[in-house]
Image (cartoon, rainbow, N blue to C red; front, side):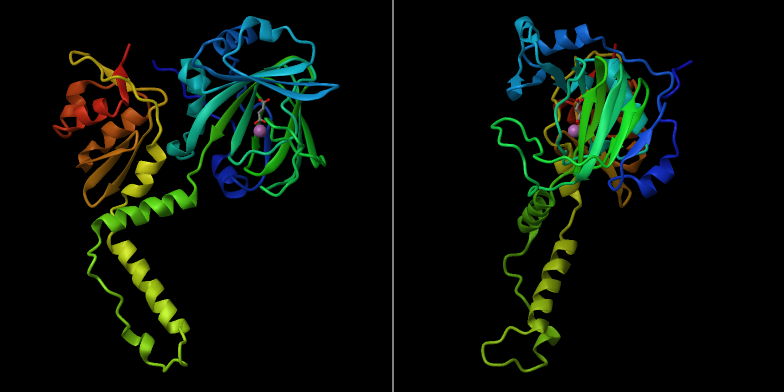
Length: 364
Ligand code: SIN
Ligand code: CO
């Protein structure tokens, strides 16, 4: 029998309606039977790897200090209140990647990575805010989290060349988290975690595309397809006589409507799927005689249904396949094992598209 899914013990619907992206939420014992899959020593070992994304942040009387990875063993011999942080640990440790199961109620393409931290007593990364949503899962030990004000790019920071820490922090709420507790922090809310005992925190982080990026891609796509001879028609905008030299509201509305209508008419929907799956990790194509395949951790795959087809996006590339592909796509996106023949049965190009986009690996 397969393992039961890891889920937060809370009302997901109420969370989405009331808290998501708006309010912080403490979920005591949200993961009651979950145990930290890593020890501090294992995390430190990972931080020594050349291609791990690691850093250490310390606080002493002389202020805050940052040491970027790759780290070496002597970096841990320090006397300040330090924290070790490693990003993207889900790509290294399958048991950490399994934490993503808790997020099934959110769009998978919004998920970024699991960052794991280990702090000595009194360690912490200082008062700051993040631009993205984060679920802070307490792995081991006890950490006090202070929540502060809403911040934006204009909020004053301390003068530090490496760290983006807040100059002022007014505590509005304070919680002590123990293993299995989860704190959700929405984007822009100041927070400051201080270890009460040596402790480990797993941060399930999200990302969101910038509207500017979406707009640029959408218009680029439309410009590739537009007829350059298509001209603005005046229509009813010229019914009222303008003052000499005047651009009336009607002229302006007419031009804006023409752009909006053209963008909609030329929209093939691919801009969103491409952008949210770009910059995923690429695996080399699996062996041709592989018996079973599965999604490469760190690869980005998403899809949407449109007019009897499924548009599939894999690490920024797009392929349109018949809508009968949907159950297979759901299995791939869930990380299930799948045979090459099952993928082939959907569309002759489907397997090579996924393999060449670097999103499949041989399943063990
Ligand atoms: C930490 O794990 O110490 C920091 C996490 C965060 O503040 O987002
Ligand atoms: Co943070």
